[in-house]
Image (cartoon, rainbow, N blue to C red; front, top):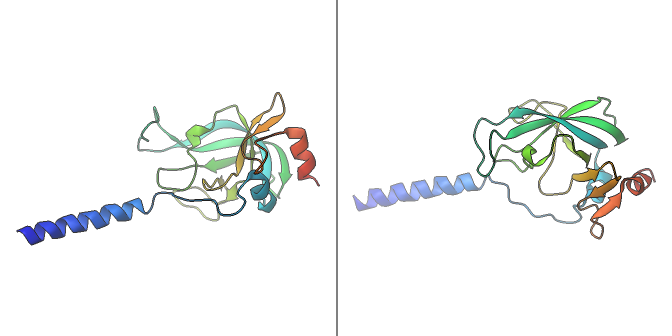
Length: 171
C-alpha cells in the first residue's frame, strides 16, 4: 500500500510540473525595446482599439467578467509593411500563451504596434491576424491628443513624442 501511494504521488507531481512548463516565463536577451523590435518587424502602425471581439470561456483570476481574447483595431497610420486593411484583429493570451491579456488594452485608446502575423488558422487566432509577444516590447501606449508615446521605446527613453517617433521611423 505504501509503494503504490508513493507512485501515485510521484505521478501526480510529474503531471503538475509538466503543466507548469507550459506557462510563459521568459527573459529578454539582447535589445527587446520597441525601437529594436519595430526595426525588425514587418508591420508597424498607430492603431485605435475599437472593440473586444472574442472572449475566453474560462474566468481569469483577478479579472472581473469575461476576459477578451481578441480585439479589433483601426489602423490610423501605417509606418511599415504591406498590410492594407483599415481594421485588423489582434489576439491575446488564454492563460497559457506568452501573449499579453487583451483586457489590458482599453477600448478607445491608441497604441503604436509592431505585432507578429499569425501564419495559420487555429483556436489561438486566424491566419493573417496578429498577436503580441509578452517577452519583448511590441506595443506602446499613445496619448493621441498630446501626441506622446509611453513605454519602453528604447533602453534610455520611456517616452517620446509621436512626431519624433515618426521622424525616426522614416529615416
